[in-house]
Image 1 (cartoon, rainbow, N blue to C red):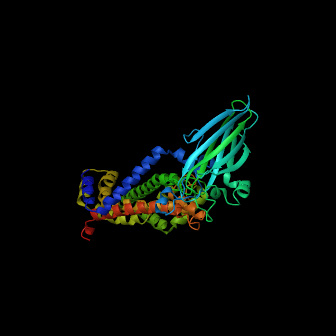
Image 2 (image 1 turned 60 degrees about the vertical axis):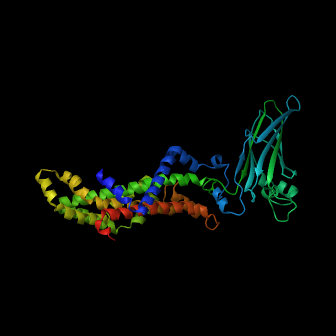
Length: 448
């Protein structure tokens, strides 16, 4: 452990490496937090879910923190359920079987922009006759606007913005999402700020009929990461992309580097036909097109990230690094301590594992650290090309979804910039640490 302690002391001399280590530590903690709080099965369920899961979130809106950089504040999503404190419920008996149930949803609206849409989700319980429901919108200046009347089934949805009768007859052709909030005295649509009330009045025709409703005002901004075209919160993919990227990069770099080093050591030690076979396989493998083969694997075999990882390691084992390691091992093999170990009767495998391999650690560690971001970018690149895992939410999958849905053309830059920024941060962090380690373990670079 002395070499580890000394390495940490040497790293302190490089502020950029310390900063990189802090970023990597933050990424690792984020990955652990994500795996614990959002288990794998839950992440898959959320990411593959539809309206039943993401019905309360707006579609393709930027994160809420973007309001900090706007002169006019866009509205955030407001969800009010029947059992919330902001709802008052009164029931008046009309007859033995008929009741008048009134629900009033009150909320403050202090934003400068108009909402994306407005929806009321009804959940009623009855035997044979569904209740009749009428709705009224009350503005801060006291105006009452009658919305519509429906027969509320057990699961009924009333989308206010799609009510053509409301738009034509009561709002003079203005979209309900604008007309319900706009000042009628202003020619240019201007939001009337203040307290709004949605009144839902239901006439029930049977005893023990229950009327519940959820009111959702879909905002123009949402959450810490925004949403996509399927209303999914992008924070799920951004969070889960962290452990996926780190695991893929670390496993690929570790599996490739360590295996390549051991194969090179075996070839040098045994020499002869063993070394010749390893060198010929390496030369053939270096001629093979790496990325097209991975695309073929993803197209014809499997798009599972673990299958792709296995093929990445297989195709990278016999890479150009074998030539570098071989040159170093040829020098180490002639060292006096190797001859001494042979004289003591050390076996071939003991000599390879305990005498040859440790001598290459100064070259191995910087290369291992520097290779991690390369494999992270490789996974993201495959996802952007449509070869990524279709199940896992990853940074590359986010960029691919944004590209296929025209995010940049629609000025939905957050959709692309957030995962791209995380990829660049990971690459920068490992590059800074790898550069410092290279200077620490390679004495010839210390004076540079």
